[in-house]
Length: 111
Ligand SMILES: Cc1cc2nc3c(=O)[nH]c(=O)nc-3n(C[C@H](O)[C@H](O)[C@H](O)COP(=O)(O)OP(=O)(O)OC[C@H]3O[C@@H](n4cnc5c(N)ncnc54)[C@H](O)[C@@H]3O)c2cc1C
Image 1 (cartoon, protein in one colour):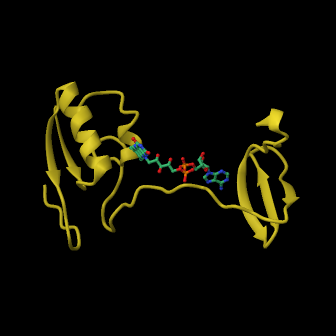
Image 2: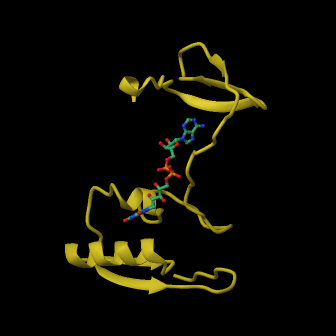
């Protein structure tokens, strides 16, 4: 990127005006840059249905599932889209017993 003449500004960016981005890291003073155009490409975060508490240990999102430090004996995957199915494949291969839940309406989980 640098070789192409792109400056990389590290930190959390906050849009503070139509052409202004503040960025910085905890413990460092913020800086502000202006640009003719600003592209927001901050990705997405997993959707957690209301009422579900994520603890990262027994109830976790796909982000946590990427870096679990243990292999659960069994795992219930809520959501049968390509990410849920991908995890189903991975955890089955690792030896977990895997169940799936898919919902077309409001999520109503009972354990
Ligand atoms: C488990 C899983 C498996 C997937 N598998 C595949 C696959 O096999 N094939 C495929 O094509 N796609 C796959 N995807 C989808 C793919 O990862 C996403 O579509 C893609 O990463 C989206 O790219 P993006 O640039 O929009 O966002 P991201 O890759 O999420 O990048 C966003 C970046 O913005 C940064 N950011 C966020 N907020 C700020 C802020 N305030 N200031 C500065 N930076 C910030 C984040 O740190 C991150 O680096 C998968 C996704 C998941 C979750």
